[in-house]
Amino acid sequence: MPGPLDGIRILDFSRFQQGPAATVMLSDLGADVIKVEPPGGGDLGRSLGLEPDGWCSYYQAHNRNKRSLTLNLKAPRGREILHKLIPDIDVVVDNFRPGVPARLGIDLESLRPYNPAIITASGTGYGERGPIAREPSFDINGMAMGGIMYSQGGGPDRPPETVQLGFADQVGAMSLALAIVSAVVARDRQGVGQHVESSLLGSQIGLQTWYITDFLRRGEQGPTPQRRMPIFNYYRAADDRYLTIAILDPRWFRPLCEVLGRPHLADDPRFTDPFARQEQRDVLLAELDAVFAERPRDEWLRLLRAAGIPVAPVHDYAALSEDPQVLANEYITTLEHPSLGTIGVTGTPIKMSETPTGPRATAPELGRHTEEILLGLGYGWDDIAALKDDGVI
Image (cartoon, rainbow, N blue to C red; front, side, top):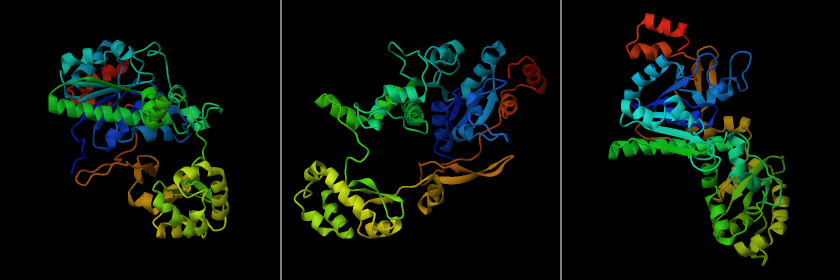
């Protein structure tokens, strides 16, 4: 059974993380993604954390399932190859600064003569309009300008903190992937190709809808301490491992107190309703810190789950990679690498009952599929050799 996006062909000019992470999500859903890279070095993401044996986790994570085509768009014959590809392409993706796609000839207006229904998609830093639209931007810039760093640090009166793991890039990638799929649906239902765009800045703002909406209403940004809600929080158990509880429905507070062996807390006037508990959060935090320190984490998990209270362990990557729930859903899985054997990879969080999803192949070596793609366009071996000699591919 083909994947849900089987038959969708994407020409991916993006590099580093924001764009490649968006297209790898689509590749996990079955899209055929051709990653276009400049001859020689390719995507600079290939070198981030490169190990002596050639392994690069950064590049592998963001480029699995894809085919690699080397192409010099500044050469006239490179543009010729591009124009031969475009009639069979659904989406062209980039994450260059605004203006660069037009210079490279991969913007909507340049490509429409070769495919009137083409969709172009750009992952930008700050959006395509405005006074700094054409300024360079990376992950940390998006977090900074999007307000997330002060929120993560505890509020505007505290030092800012970054969120690790390429946070703005990954959130921006999700937004860009959604934009691309929406444009494909619009084309299929309404017959229109178009340009879509999503930015690091915009996606960071969209991520904080609740808090920013509250600010726009009240005109002030309150503190955001890490442990501001006592019953929606993390706690350390007796074995120095952590767990989380997540009580939003007030009816769960009394069962929590009973499981913890402190039923009197449910009737304590300081904690009888959500407003009182928040008003006395420091007192309640201290009470719960002391209680959770009395038993090992897994014992608490067992008791709390038996009572139907929302609870979960705090995992590091070692625990995450071995958790039966993670493995049952193939959120962690394996692929066969052509030279390194079996490797662990993250799966996709998207599951469908009738169409398969998930990783299929490791990231390609630079230019691995160039000849295959050119032969499919009608080029002969002599043509390919000449293109190599001239630095076009």
